[in-house]
Amino acid sequence: MRSGTWVLGSTFLAADMLAGMQLGCSSPKAMQSGYGVPASEGTITATEGDNGNTKLEIQVKHLAEPSRVASDATVYVVWIQPRDGATQNVGALTLNDDLEGTLKTITPYRQFSVSVTPEPSGLGAKPTHAPVFTAEVDRSN
Image (cartoon, rainbow, N blue to C red; front, top):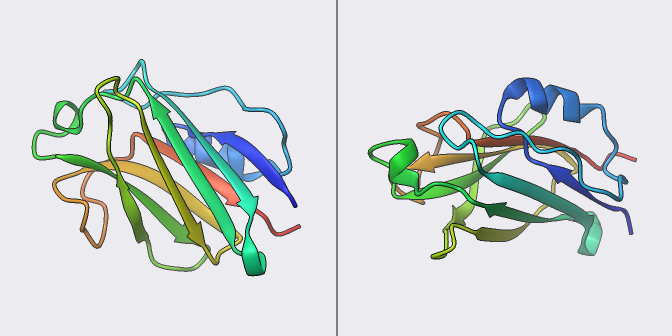
């Protein structure tokens, strides 16, 4: 089973840098915070699941309430975008009283981008605000 923990970056530049890393990395990478969430921390762990699927676990700490990042936001949404594919909502990442949150999900994709955005609803079909975290996952090997 291949696994790795990647730190979610706050900009697409960070996502581009992560794109060259192999998922088999066994230690977390340096974290970068996004605009409006300077004290936040986020990691993503991707492992091989049943039938070659990718299991994802996204964890955040010290992330501001969504409405403090975007005035109309009530929740953070996790998105994946497969290579040459449309962005997909994979679930809402809600925060506890300590401003920590976790989302676990499964996707059939092996190569994709991940982003976390503040949104008015957890049911949106596409992001409406800039991401507070981004990462690239590549399990092609």
